[in-house]
Length: 313
Image (cartoon, rainbow, N blue to C red; front, side, top):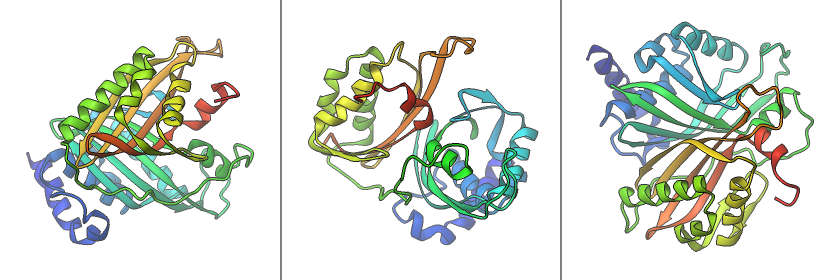
């Protein structure tokens, strides 16, 4: 209880400081889970208060990231040291973010920025500025985070670090995503998203069209596509990959928005993968209008997905 009270007190302090970013939010201290994620964003990330990590993360914490897509456990000391090392090299701040909360889950949809000023993963600093989307869905037990599925533009980050050739140009700016209202409820939106993911997991992508407005707009990394057919086709390309499996999927809905994140896998192309799988993380934000998805923003592990897509995808 003392831990929760401290988190709630910290959140009460940050409300006036973050009002422009969070004006579209409901009360950020209405639940322990919402308080938890605000504490992480405003104190652990933006103020480098790494000593607060034991107040918000469980000892059993598991993180899924493009570096460990299948999920890996981190001890408390490892979590703290990881943030310290990242702060020294890339003092990442969440300059824009939006939090959705539903039940045992929260979603953070944001934008992070930093200057590369110290060695990271053996790569010398360049002093250049980084900016890019950050997205994660967190699961909680008793107010503590036990699991994250976290995404960013991995190809763009690898290009920035000099780990990949600069083959792509990305629009690096915050998404224009705000919580609004519509005639249908978050519970109805959640049901639609669960049906969508069940269909995708079974390979039945033809039924996905029922979830979308005819003039849906979908924002992918390299293009914005208009209409139901190209959006469903992109899902179909994903589901058609060899051995495609949805290992786990999470949905968080609030207002007219739903955030989804999934751990998926395909049959491994590399026999060195001990379990015979290649894991690919996928996430998106969906905006509903009158029960149909009218707009989507995609963020997935493009470094893992693009090499395995067929040439016509």
